[in-house]
Image (tube, rainbow, N blue to C red):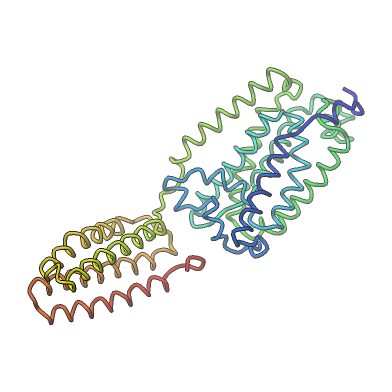
Length: 384
């Protein structure tokens, strides 16, 4: 096909447009909820992106595996979004025209998934967001495609720039698209290598996983390039889709076991609110003469302490916690122990009519309050 033929330039790339539009919409939605993308500079903790679907080990490893994919569409900051969008606009349209929209979309998802899984295995404590690993996977896929297709052009064409010649000769992209592809690619690599890759082994792990996945996928899609069209293109895209599904099913076996202290702590907060509510209602009934001391003690032992002790057992069962959660977990356990002691002492004092025990329970409750304050002190930055 002639490189100047209008049909080559008119070939649509809806998947690329969607992959740029979705992160933009997410970033605007996050912004409207008070999380300014301008505050999330490179190199800082992205704790505020966790509720939006960022990849976070304790959440991802405990029933929220969808974060391995959703994190790809959550920009960490404006700078990252602009560079990634620029790179994806050039690279994405180029590859989508080359391999087809379906295969390209699956390729992007598979690379992003692999990058997030690699980062999670390397450091489950980190919060990961952004499409940069997926885009690097696309770069690796493009390299593999052209490596497989080097025989499609003459040696002379190879020396003059095989990438441009192959793409244009197949009708995949007009020359101006190839030119923009090169520019966006160089911008992306310069930004990520200079800004993130050299500063963080975690980012390197994500990029390595995505690049390896992209390269292997590129070999599948590009051997040889002339066979990608038509039915062969659909078969190869279907094979990638099947690979993506299998990878998603196998991901839990590769994900490191990490106990989610945050999630269980939020449950504890709810249990405590319920316990206090039950006690205050019973206490009001005692003051109004509807309950006596023994009945109040029964309510504490039957309706408050069982839930409290269940939470104590669940926290005691946490053995695979992140290093920065160790002190926090110890503080929570100490608080649970002190509060349990205060509740039980109060129930004993009420049942026996022993005012010294009741006074002791009040003192122990004050000590439990101090232990509760220590939980906030032990919390890692970003969780206060």
